Length: 149
Image (cartoon, rainbow, N blue to C red; front, side, top):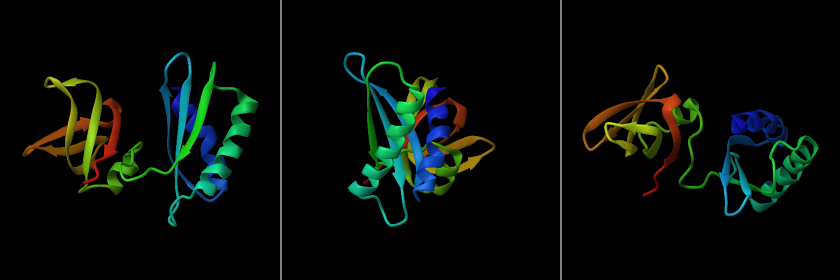
């Protein structure tokens, strides 16, 4: 998968600059353009200067390797209040928070689940939705983010 390959290549650059690489998203836009969004974080928060510094270094990598066909835009961002969750470690860190999960397929007639993240067990994400507990395989999750109140 392109996003995981890019994340693997971008991670050392971001970490060398002193930031956490939260995740990488590749989104199709109108026409044949692609948006590559790289989420970074730091204990002290993220400023515009931080984003510019990471953008410069990641741009150099992308220009040298050219992993994305066609035109693309690079965006460096903090995870924000509606923080996306990309790894099982992210899920473990945010147990007790309200999340929205989008599955890559429908389970019991639905692919979207919004509820309280209960636990992470054996590669499954446990979420409580309307007093019903669902065990969702991490491998089947397309996207997840924290729901800010």
